[in-house]
Amino acid sequence: MALLNGLVIATLYLRRKHPGHVFTIWYAFWLMLTLFSGLFYYVWANGQSIPGSILSGASSLGGFVVWFQKTSMDFRDERYLIASIYIAVLLPQLMSYLVSGIFGCANRLILVEWITAAMTWLVIKFLAVLSGILMAQAIAALYASPYLHPDALPLKLLQSIMMISLSFIIAGIFYFTYEYRFKRMLVAIRRPFKPFTNYMVSYAASAEAREAKKHRYAWLRKRARKLASGVLWN
Image 1 (tube, rainbow, N blue to C red):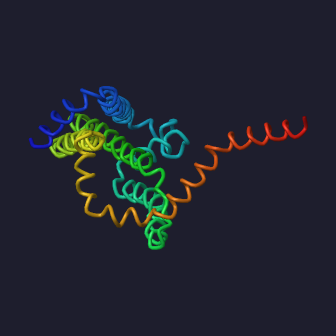
Image 2: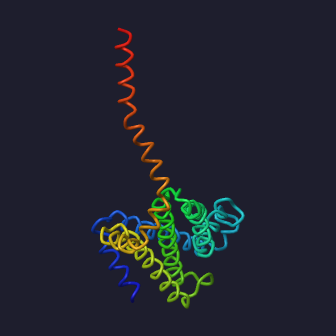
Image 3: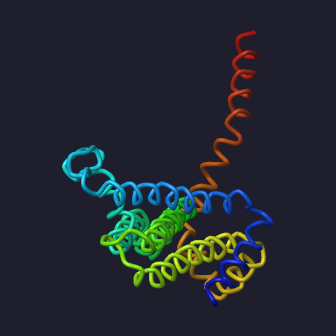
């Protein structure tokens, strides 16, 4: 019940500024529910002929379907994949920032917002797809004996509701971090550490300022040299 309340609250929040994301998450859910419901029914209704058809595990299409379902429901591998990509992108930058910051030469971290958004949407997509497949299995449990039994219906239904609710809750939390009030809270938290962070970027900032100043007045120096050479020539 708490997760359903979270789904409703997150949807009401997202619809204000990100209604397209609400549509995208539900589309992923219904797409998987429709495809796998049809697939499960076909397998159940044609159980005797499946081994020799294109949906058998030995065929390329059947093998792809089996692989896709297994991958889409493997939370452990998905978790490791997302964590590995996130760490591979951010950890070198973070360690470089800390070590070079000791000498005041740290540069601003790049791609943090982009990689965070990409990894968050990978999680949201995975949960929505998983929810659709679980709901298709819950429906198949009503009729698809001996592959699935009615006893599996409550668990599959509960798992599906949990996954789609978590998908919306994560999306709502992620986009809340874009709110001005959240950023103000972060500024307040970081304020006591401002002297340290200012020192960590002090030399890099001064070097950038000198370079920017050089480029800013480059056109003026070039113009002055042209005028001076013109005067001397004349």
